Length: 284
Ligand SMILES: [Zn+2]
Image (cartoon, helix red, strand yellow):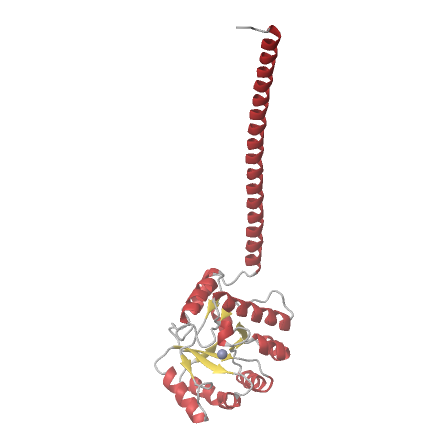
């Protein structure tokens, strides 16, 4: 075989070159992989920081809406239990100009403090009536914003939205950013009906935020067909009978003149039966 020294030397040089190129390529690949890992870590950390910031923001929002404390929630949940006879007059769907004003006049005369479950839309229309309710020592509670069942009970979030929207109107009318009712009454009641599932889910959310909810255990059917004073009184007597602590459902919507007209008789009956009148402030 014929060997050219020069060729052998050149080939060795080429091999050396290739060897170095491969080493450099490997180093570049390793560096690229390490850079990739670092970048991924960086992105993940950023995500975590963003998540933490969001969590902090949520906590701050929740802090603003403090809700009731545990004892207050307990007191509301035990409202139907009492050793003494007591009556909570509650009025839903207001404030309306005419009817609520008449009701307030009677309550003032009788020195009775009641609880008003107001609607956001009505508060917006009659803020001065809401202010009067508050100034005269009645408890302002929340009955949602629209009272349109298909809107309120679309899902659990829409129930909470209705609560928040109404709460906002109350704050605005009272000119008091710190006012929180922390008490909701589900339109149509908290159980049953076609929206029972959504109500159950919303209750869980309210519980998380320490917002109480309250139904009733006595009523006049003033929004469900009672057309005369006698009917109102008979319905009241039937549903109050045998109960020591009664939460009475009535309404102060604009068309509830009959409720205002019958209120004196309602109060007289309860007084004669030995009930003393309370509102939410008395138990929380
Ligand atoms: Zn209602």
